[in-house]
Structure formats: structure tokens, C-alpha cells
Amino acid sequence: MFSFVVFAFDLVGTGSTTNCPNRQAIEQSLNKVNIPARIHLTGYQDHRGNVTLYSNEGTLLAALVVECVAKISYGQYLRENIFKSLNIYFRTVAVRLSDFQNTEELVKHYAYAVNESFIQQWNHEIPQFNGNLSTSLHFPLFSFSGYPAGLLRMSAISLSMFLRMFINNGYPLFSSQSIAEMKQVVGGGLIRLYELAWHWRTLSNTRLYLSHGGSLPGMIHLMLTNEMNNTGVIVLTNTNTTAPIDLTREIYETVESIHLTLFQCFEIRFIVFKEDQIKTDT
Image 1 (spheres, rainbow, N blue to C red):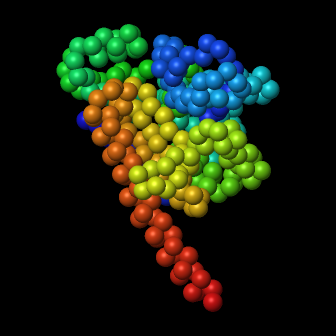
Image 2 (tube, rainbow, N blue to C red):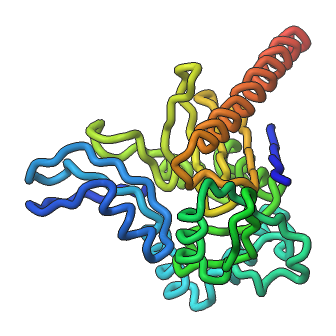
């Protein structure tokens, strides 16, 4: 029922307040309006720069700026300036379900229900769900109020075209200066290594990887590049990691294991290729 799709080849806000909410309170307030967020609090004193918040709301603001400047919808801007430039067929990638000619071709989403309380939670968060307890739950196709900060549906191959552009220093879409700006770490070393919608994460092999990931009910993705910026791995899956159960941890460990295995494979091949190229050149 569940499937993995693999293709190999934060915004940060700072502020000061004496009534700063804790991480859980912030996450709950965002989740109530269906805006998924990952929160990291670095301190709890009343001075600027000690609290950080990762949220998709920054992406919403950026999309609004694009629409105001370009005078066209965000979806149209993506099709004309991103997808077309990367040779991505726009009918295979979209945010709105209405933009797809045939939604039957979209991957279905599932979650594992432990007990009746999980059903009540899903029915509250996604009213169109309206399901009963049956261990593996199928989610109907849905959207949410956070458009267009997430839920950009596409294939791993289409997403890889964007990642290859990123690894190729922006070609053919952005200038190298734009990529350098996107990779600039913010926070002055006081917080997690965040960049513009990307962040550095350490995996179980103790190595750093530049990453962008996300999750919604019945779907997760993780996209990584290595420190040398010569190999990228994408994992897409239609399973669920929002429940506080052992299965969630096991899924994350499996996704990480897939990444590490593919990095090991392709990095070795890259080194061998470079050595052969040097021998040929000499």
C-alpha cells in the first residue's frame, strides 16, 4: 500500500518578548490552521535573537510579493519562469488540484491509526476525511489554507530537475550570485544552520548535508545534497510521520538509511569517474 519514490543523482525570525510561548504552543497554533511548522527555540531570555521559528509563512509572503510585482498568479509565474526553464511539463506539477488534467494519476496517501483518538484527530484536521478505524487509513486528495507554501505535487524526476539546477550553481535558471545568497547561513552561529528555505542537518554518519524536507498527513519528502555539492538524493513517500508512535521513528530511520546508501554509492562512482578523467587527461 505504501510506496517510496527515490531519485538519486528557514526562514528564520528573531524577536523579543517577555511572554514568549514555548515550542509546543507555537506548533499547535500553526497546526490549527493547517500550517505545518518545525520549531527550534534557542533560549528563553528577554533579548533579541534568542528565539527562532521555522515556518512556511515566509514562503507565503514571498509568493504574495511575486504576485504583486509580476501581476500574475503565483501558479502562472511558476509555470512560465520555473517549470518552462527547467523543461518540466507543467501539467505534471501543480499546487492546485484543479490544475491537473487527471487527479487519478496522483499518488494516494495513507496513515496508520493506533486507536480511535487518531481518527478523531484526522476528522478534525481534515473534515473531508470522515473515516473509520481500520489500521491503514486512506486520505482523500486535499489542499490547505497555507497555499502556496507547500503541497506542490510533482514527481521525483521533476523535482530532481530543480535539484540538479541547484547543484549546478543555478544553471540554467538562476545566477551563481542568487544561489550564493540562498546558501548564506543566517543567525550568526547562535541557531541551527538555516539558509533560505534550506538547512544543514547531521545524519547518523556524522556528516553534514544540505536539506529541504516536509511532511503532511500521508506524505513526506526529504531532499539532500552532500557537502561537496556534487550528489543529490530525493526520497518521496506516501506514508505518514505525524503520529507520535514508534512507526514514525522507523520511517524516518528508513528514509535516512536510503539516503546514506545512495550517497555512498554515487559518491564512490563520482570519485572513480574523476580519477579516470584525470588519468585520461594526463
